[in-house]
Length: 201
Image (tube, rainbow, N blue to C red; front, side):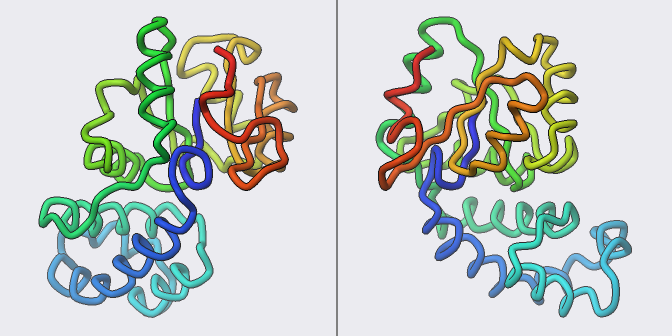
């Protein structure tokens, strides 16, 4: 099971490309789709646009924001304005694990829709056939051990049969607390591994 930001994909891509794109297009998107997205807006306090823009600046892990960001990015990918960054070792590792019959899941704070867009429109092509499923904040936050317990139950595996790869130590700790194996990846050095190629299946 893989994290995205800082694990399969560059943190800079999310921070410097995706977030600014969503921020730029959010006001017009909300104005154009306000009826369609009314249930989501109802979950946002105060002036929805102002609050959502503030949440983007704070990198708030709020499900309504993540859902709306995913919808905005979907249009950007469809228009050819966005292309999902993945590290070169990401498609190599996914293909290796798929060839070994090992199912690979994604667990990210970004919405499931946004996850599918990154891998479906990646710089290495459509990688979604190599993935078995996706999890986001609807399963709980990544720094809470209960989230990993829920995911294990959903997948139908014992926690000890799952390996989670992330670049955040607190997420490693939460996974361990649930009995899930976890590896800290540090692309700039340190950590348990520096690339997905080093993750032993």
